[in-house]
Image (cartoon, rainbow, N blue to C red):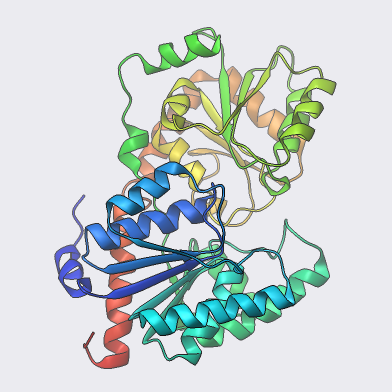
Length: 403
């Protein structure tokens, strides 16, 4: 994929010292996005990149390998943890200040809430030339109660004063922040979370038949798949409720992903009498193959910043069923590449599933439309190109062109 100005971005970014700070590197989209950005900034754009994170026991091995192979330095900050803890957060701030003072980055790029607050304050206090923050969605609904949401919004309003730019995954995310008085319009830049599209678009010969044979799924069975962290915000429990409402025999559903909710969800499936229809596959490294073995994708999230997994499914040519939350509408066009339903609505999801089961031609039409929609807007290389340009332009605005 060629993009105007890509070559100048490479030369302008070379030699920049960039520190990325994220609360933890786990199996979520924010970690994958951050790792991909670090790898390409170091390997393609010639930046001196350090990635700092709190303790991350769930860091996927493929992320570790990519970072190490590209020469990205990695630092663990022991007190940088997700859950609020006044004493621990003070210690985390001290660790962050010490790291920023030692590395003296040209660009400090923070990710997610806790690292975003501590990192932006450290960058402002130590006068880092350019400070950029990516929230990777937000937690204003779908996670906590109203009081905590108001508190988080207040903290984000403060932290917005300590950075130059805020990267939104969708225009909807920008609107959500501005409606809560967080930052100023000129701070926001929309850069969708990028996916290595070729990996999901390419389909090996016989992969559908091979995967189905291994899983014991017949060649003519309609197969749905979801890929999600097994946490309440992903709404997998809503999917199970929806499957109870689909006319018998319900299509097969593969649930790919791991998380603390798995035992409860497995019990829910058992009690619903759906153990022969719904299978839990756990965390998998062959997600592209699994997507190509399926006929449609479904997700019932209670909140999504953007929904990278929708992009992956659409790149694989699948029609999608999803909930109209967060920035999903900026990825999935209702009635064109998929069907969007309200959140917490099992009956609506069941209806969308039944509609796709009954109409193979509509599945094919929506799948083809989704493939066309994701490229190049959601390509990983294009994402990092735009981030690199943002760094250099922000630095030029601050220093008149110097590094």
